[in-house]
Image (cartoon, rainbow, N blue to C red):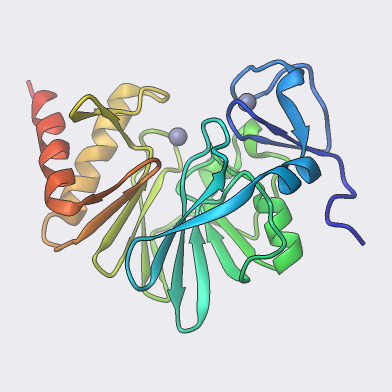
Length: 241
Ligand SMILES: [Zn+2]
Ligand SMILES: [Zn+2]
């Protein structure tokens, strides 16, 4: 049985996967339907490219690049892969991932297809699972509290989305699109409530203040921690009254 039996489309503007329906506009970015391709066509025309972050972590992206798609990351722990976030393109030729842990509900990608094909378990914070954009996406665990699984620590900070969760694995921090590179600095992600986003960033700062990191993995960057931290502190300080 093909994984593509159910109707599923991918918006080429933002990478959103529309499950089981074909609307006039993308519910995520508003693009018109001529920008949608079937997920099968997407799988045929795009591949997943990997970029090594360190010995255990790889960054995953669709290639050619697929609209606004955010980078996902694959972490190898005890011969098992755990993904943080998920590419928009589904491929059946990857190594099995055991879990897909989401930072938030904006870029759920083809997680439903990965879940089905590889029997992966999809986790997201309960408050982000409730958003209308996420309602056709299946989740196996809707967590409510911070957790630690196989050494990956999850911290719910709210902010950019109500369920936004950042992750730490060893000396690497995963923050997806909480901060957006702009010129040579960061801005807070403008697609969310600005006050909450700043509050969430303060929580993030407090949680990481006594940890030492090497890298930070974001939605379109991997940065050395000292460089990232300097930009992050500058942004936070600029918001203090
Ligand atoms: Zn879209
Ligand atoms: Zn986002």
